[in-house]
Image 1: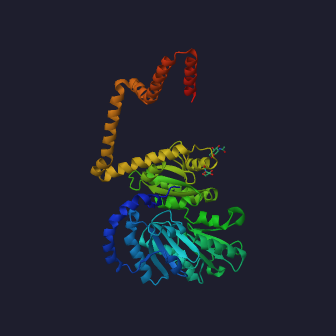
Image 2: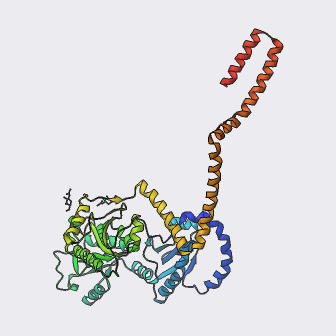
Length: 468
Ligand SMILES: *[C@@H]1O[C@H](CO)[C@@H](O)[C@H](O)[C@H]1NC(C)=O
Ligand SMILES: *[C@@H]1O[C@H](CO)[C@@H](O)[C@H](O)[C@H]1NC(C)=O
């Protein structure tokens, strides 16, 4: 699954190195700023030794990267917020181009890369780059992997705060150990809690203990080792609500669940109610057919078709339903517009049993198409945001190229075949001239000698020369 483009490539480093000189001018200004930025530490290659037992939230950036510049004020706010809330998390930033050895040791592959480092563990942050989201991530991941809920009130409180809540219920057990392991890995995605049975409301009946439960969509679902496979894959699939508003970021996150994503592409402001009706249909299927589809599908809607269009490099009508396979970038469209619940269920089933026609994919042709498509949209977006710059950037080289083409074409169209012959002749002249010179010499010598043996010898020598 392609991530929404919000980071700069590491591979652009070389090209940008040249531009770094101009940044020297900025250093003076940066020095002035650094007094203000005491909440964010500038890290260098001593960081590996100095960080020891502390928890660090670090952004690896490149000075030339636009996305990093955009993150900078947010990052300062994050540093300030964590400091003032008394969080144990230290906030830092590292110029990954200056300390590229360190950056590659931390597995940095794009800028900015945000990581929380806790002992031997490094957690990647992939969510939206807003202060609240990043602070929430830092608080969640820096805390204990599993948080105990000691009372009914505490449970109620957490239920209100979390749309999806994982809970281990029971005493010590192998399942609890497994739960701890899964939690310390998947805490990048969600919170994990534990409680005793007394803490739960009466309405929650659990078939057996110990168990792992997820509370979401106004219900609860228990983990079943035999049906659901490994605990970590179950958590990974259950960590979203059954129905979501989906944007580029969520779609990218959903991709990591390995589920197919069924999306109502709608217009929230559609006056005809068509959009609302389709959204309602998908919502109902998500809830009423959970048993059938939850394992394989995530449901939701997306406002507007811009994102989907660029994803499939085509055009979907609004409103309509599309099913995406984020693992291989294939997508499915219904053969006719969906009017009823039955049609929708039919469509989803046909994707599930493999009888629906798949489009797109991540094959070779599709990749070529993607490169061309991306290039086109880049050019289009430059033209849209600044037509003058667009003309200059793309118009000038295009003009030069077309002039060159024109020149070449008109030159060739005179008498193309003769040109080739002329070339051939030119290419051969040197050799032949030499040959002719030698032959002349030989003819002279032959004329001097005037004998049949010499004539024969001469021929032999010539033949030899040809071979060599
Ligand atoms: C989705 O893609 C994966 C990976 O290629 C594949 O194994 C799976 O069968 C696909 N699912 C559907 C319904 O096509
Ligand atoms: C797949 O599902 C569709 C819709 O339910 C059904 O019409 C079709 O017969 C099924 N095909 C196979 C091969 O099971």
